[in-house]
Image 1 (cartoon, one colour):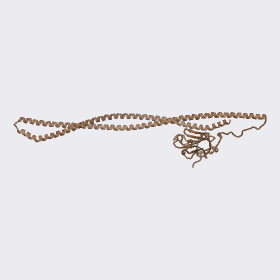
Image 2 (cartoon, rainbow, N blue to C red):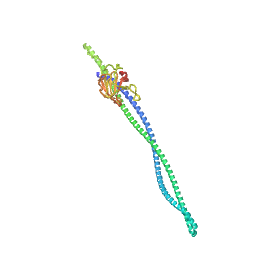
Image 3 (cartoon, rainbow, N blue to C red):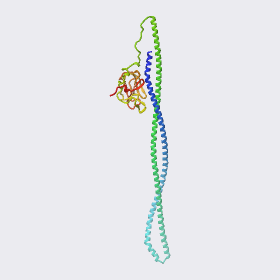
Image 4 (cartoon, rainbow, N blue to C red):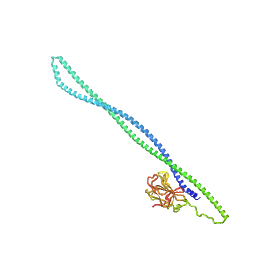
Length: 427
């Protein structure tokens, strides 16, 4: 009977703690599910945006390919034009050299004709002895003059044609260079656009990868939280069954004890009067033990578990997420600093827990619990009895914290209570 009452009392004592943990876990699970839904929606939007950028990138690179082909064709045309210009320039130089030589010869002949021509004509006119020779000589001079004039006309016409062709080719070359410059400008602009879109695409790929990794992490958290919640619910159900069984056993034992007492009383009355032997004093159990006085009377008088600065207060928004709020406080403290029990009690939990890291939970009786999380090390184990002010752990950053500090919370009948209302005002 005594053992059954102890089991029943322990079950009643631990049930609020497990119920509170279940509520917190369910809250975290709901928040995680909402985060997963938002992440999936955001991933869908990123995929659509990525698809659009890829489509634009494909169009840009296709246009660049066409321009590259046009530039290559223009470069071939420029090469041909340049070769033709070089050939014409070489021909021009040859003609210019020939012109210079012909001009020199013509100049000599012109001077000779000018100097001797009048005298020769005069001699021919005065010399009437050989008229046939005169006529032939005169005809010769006419042919020579006409040939020279025709040679000059043909030479000048060649130079004129060369000049026109050179001008046309220069104009064509200028046009091709202008087209090439325009295409190069367009290609540079398209290259710029392609680079920008590639950068956007790379950023989107990184964003998608990061979101996908975050989504996987959230889904894993959801699975882990579901397992924790299932374990807590199974534990609560088992404790409820054990408590009911213990209550029934205790009730039967009490009834049997009462019947036995009545039988003994009747037997003693019938046989011989004697003073019955009885056990005095109330039954005690761990749930009835108090350490350093009643916790309920310590409001506003408790010391803080560690010296430091409050980083987060009770009821404030947690992590910028309006859906979750602090159910305790965060105290900044140096790593390795000793964490002390704010009140005497019994350790009912000393282990790692998601979201709280290395966690110690003290039972102070009558439904009061104090929690100490994110520790670096645990100095006590479940079942240990501690006194007020006794070191129970050391400050750390377990549970994924960026900096060292202590998570401190108080539960009253399974409900969070502001630690600042229980601990003494600082400074």
